[in-house]
Length: 236
Length: 287
Ligand SMILES: Nc1ncnc2c1ncn2[C@@H]1O[C@H](COP(=O)(O)OP(=O)(O)O)[C@@H](O)[C@H]1O
Ligand SMILES: [Mg+2]
Image (cartoon, rainbow over all chains, first blue to last red; front, top):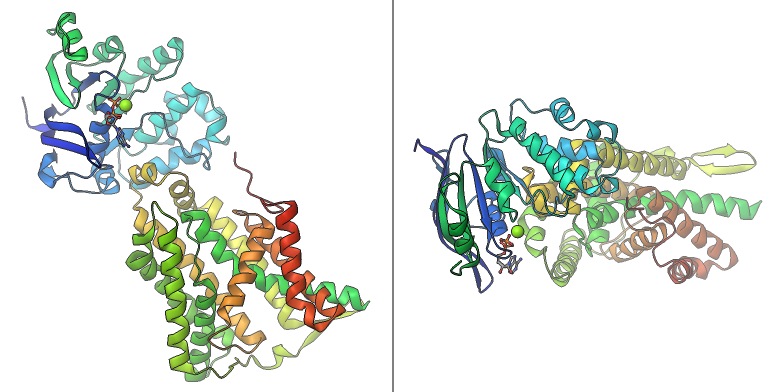
């Protein structure tokens, strides 16, 4: 593997006394699209929040483009080029659609993504740009959440269950847009409970189970049985 | 005619109350912080204005050029150094800490300036008046009211038309997610307090030109500010101006009936609004 963009070394995470992640090791190369799968409560969201800096770690537990970033605040991690599309979209209700997108560019990072390009990717958002974000449908809100992350021109983008709660036809249209997003060498981690969806867009997968990596491999080599076992922790 | 005059005086007084209230409203809106020391910070600004005018021999309004940035700087350092540590979780720590700050400010001012009432001298503007219709209005109250409108329009512009205002609103909505956008919450809150105390500087100077003050008068200014915010409705700056006007009018009408009733009438108006519309007259309509 070429030099990894992101590497995790024995990453733990805690909520008070509860330990949610146990010694996660992970390496992701530039331009890779990696799926993170696992049952509800396995620790997928916790993993992404740790990488994004919303949960504090020791500096060396997360390395990104050669820097140790585990102890940085989330805004410092964002400046370095990691963007999270959070679970449940989490738009800013007080901001219009366009303001939600503009605030994504707050880091001031240069790159190809701009308001115009996001509107080209999701034309409906341009029609709705002055509306409150809360008046949009779920699918449109997800487009804003993705657009907001892209506006930061990240090198690494983290998607947390972008299909959650959306109708299949909407999920399809969002996943159809993914190649345009990650096609230009952006590195991506995609968290999904829908295994099929996640594997179809990724080249490699990690399966989490109760805070530990229970399976990893190239998506075209791991078998359905392996996944079932790693997912549920039972013999299939 | 006398009654109309009282209502006009009260309306203009409301401008000053709105200036007391705007900073309170702003910091509560951005970081859910109730600043018990707000009134004492207004008084601090008045004393800073006094010292500046005496030392440099300049007009109190010119002193704003020094007091505003100074108060903004104090606000930023205060927020980042102390108040940020009290936020997040329980509402009690910020109340206790700002209460402590209030005590410290009052005693420090007492040490430095004694308990003797002081006043800033703004020259002829203090006694000048203009005829409006059949009424005679003081230039200073009219100017104060105009400044209040300008300040609130300015805050409104910052809040809804600038990147800083966007950062305020986003951080207030969800500080974790705002942090993901590259916004350092500690800095955003520092900026909010800096802005609030810059407004406090204006309020303090206008207070100190209008009436005499001593280190103990901050508490009443805090109450007037609170009442204006609550009457107007939380999170609505124009509502705060309306709240200030209602409070001011109630006070002058009360004083007209019986000079001893001025403050009582204001508090009664506040209680009536609170009883009928606990959310205030113009609460912010969330989308
Ligand atoms: N804020 C929190 N406080 C306490 N426990 C939490 C919190 N968030 C998640 N957890 C726990 O951490 C574990 C992992 O949660 P999460 O990362 O959200 O899983 P996933 O995203 O895979 O569904 C779960 O057991 C969950 O109950
Ligand atoms: Mg999750």
